[in-house]
Amino acid sequence: MTPAHSLSSALKAPAARSSARDVGVGALLREWRSARRLSQLDLALDAGVSARHLSYLETGKSHASREMIARLADALEMPLRERNALLVAAGFAPMYPETALATPELAQIRRAIEFVLKQQEPYPAFLLNRHWDVVMANQAAVRVNRFVMDGRPNRHSNMIRQIFDPEDLRPAVANWEEIAGELIRHLHNAVAAAPSDTVARNLLAEALAYPGVPAHWRRRQFDTAPSPLLPTILRHGDSELRFFSTITTFGTPRDITLDELHVECCFPMDEATAQLCRELAAQDAAVPASA
Image 1: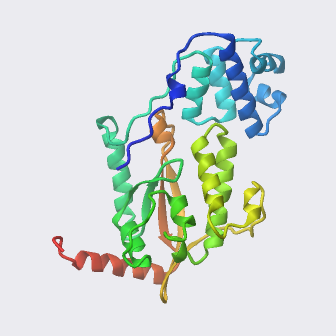
Image 2: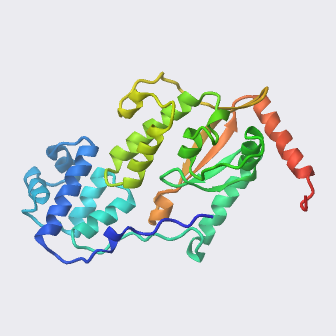
Image 3: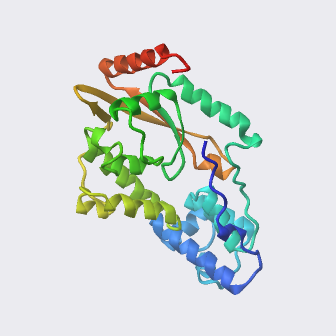
């Protein structure tokens, strides 16, 4: 189980009030407003403030109150981690904690996650963080992965790297260009939605650097064939597994860790896939525990 990332050093900065602090707030607001493609007037209307006051906040001519920061963050739909960063830049203490999933405080949450993963058997399910790191997985995910990779372990614990690395899961993905293109789209959107997230930005650059990645994927708006539901097709020899996925998130999270986690459950798209998953589970159950 991977512990959640700790707060960045930026969130530990002193909360002294200064003109530099307010310029920092203004830069963050402009960055997020641009990412959300909002004009000053649009954001002002959404937050219930005057466009003039918002302009003063962005230029550092006015100080942002804690209440104002909350209103603007709500209007911009900022994740909890970024809300903390905005509060600290404004000279306030961060509001939202970041608790490692392995701590006693989140024991009940962890049990709920484990229950969801177990209930998904014999089909794969994963717990992922905002950077697509696989935090937990059920045994079905292990079995399917082992089957399509001839027993070889993954080189990476990050799903993006697994899909893009030719020496990892990539050769087993029959519709790789569709899946990889959709992941790149999500990465572009993640970078645009959280401009200060350097990890997502670096992960996007790394994915684009792998061999065989089309050059036009470097643009955020690249053309892909529309599809109402994109399956993941895994192939091993003459066997093929076809899955579609659902995403489960926590309702109204007040902790950064929970805000950034989601469970991805894979469901069979045909009876052949369902049967193969059942057979893999039966084979696994027939192996003695000491084997």
